[in-house]
Length: 320
Image (cartoon, rainbow, N blue to C red; front, side, top):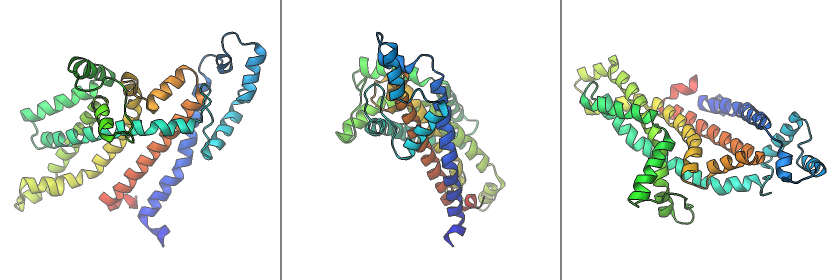
């Protein structure tokens, strides 16, 4: 009986898609890493290593095996939560990810919170005043925010609020488990820099969707029945754009995870983004592959949550 429930069937379809997505994403990244110029074994052996030493390293790390064999071994171990060890530090990659993940998660959460808390009110304001000076100002700000490079904004924020005014720390981060208030304080500037583009996207998408709903025949009928504009907006307008807003939130969260790589580099934040950049530079491929694997799992989980929320907001989604 439970298997016939539309919502459970929808979740089952999404779960069935997880494995192919993980395999495809990790296979592509694994292949791209193999195309990086240079010999990893020679890099690990050092400048004055002999050919024998380089050959020993290739055998020790399985680099002498065919590409598909290497990928299969990695995938099989990853399925058992063994993401191999770092070439440089010899530490388990999973341990490094678990240590740095909370820092990146806090940054992304703060950026998402800022994007929604600013973007949603501005989107509603612009949609309810179409063609006015307020609408023009809000849409202009949103267009500027979409085009604004996050790394440039990050440097401006550091120069202004850290170096000149001294209000916020310029670099580093504090773990949530150590001091929650200080952790949020350190995350303010990076989160603002990361959230600028997301806030602009929320404004544009919400404004467009809400204008369409408020101009529909359904809303005109509500006006004819004597409902106030405020009641129509909050009880009917926003309810009908909830699916659109959830879609934006899902896409925005994935975008923020990717953008965190640049922001963490600018602010020297010890998160997963800075870790994968450093690993790519020194050709520490197990770390790169492990971080990509973790990101794919996280994005899939976010999309799964969004899909479930779709069915709560609009039960018709589960029937599709």
